[in-house]
Image: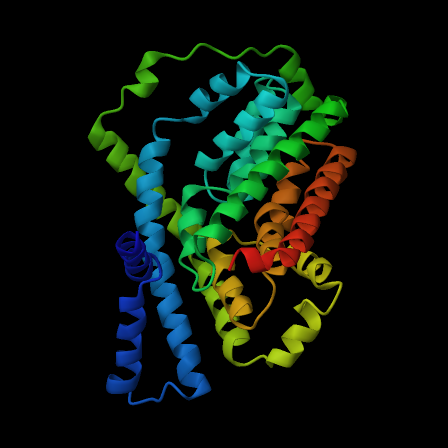
Length: 346
């Protein structure tokens, strides 16, 4: 068992956390640039270069792999699967299927609109919408790549994301809020049926799936690269330049409002899981609680202002506010719970 543990730790350090890259950047800064890693500026440069390269390497590999799998689950197939299941089972299935969709809330909303127009139950579509930006295979591996987080935190993040998606979708379903969809959606929904799919949709050749996966890598990198750089920049700033005492006063566990503050800061921002990772790493290194960090990550990925503007095009204000209230309340509760049990996770 000890041998297996050692092998797993080695793989985690070298493949996910990329210790080899960390050491290489140290060598670059000290031997080639002639700077000292004891200097704040050198540490910031190291943080920025290391995290940027690490995230992009992981992104390319993970997006390609997951997109290849996703090619077997186009929106039409997902819609057909969801259309067969109702009630709590439908919410669970919607949340699970949300894990194999694109990575940010803005890109999930067009699919959500298509599902709604197709006549799928409103609770199921909202379970899908909540889980899609929260949870995916890439986020699990990327969270594991953060030094100090590890497998327990990654699994816990996935579980709470799925639970929130199921609970949120179930509440919206029980409240019978279909009437608060925009009128044009209701008109289409009344006359819509889920069409039988053609077998040709699934008969993609291997080279077509590879081509699709490569295109997904290009599209997603093009969409998120700026947010990754901004996130890494903020992370480097937090890591080396913002006084630790100030961060602890604002977001530390001694401040009873730390989770609320993290949620308020996160919601107006627009990024995805990739842009929040370097910020999460910097906050963790400063001793901020896991619950506060996860609240920030969830708020950014699920309730960003641009995605809420997009969602307002398909739902009326009352349903939009109910959705925001349910999700924000959920991530705040999750934050406080995780801060209370953080000793079990790290």
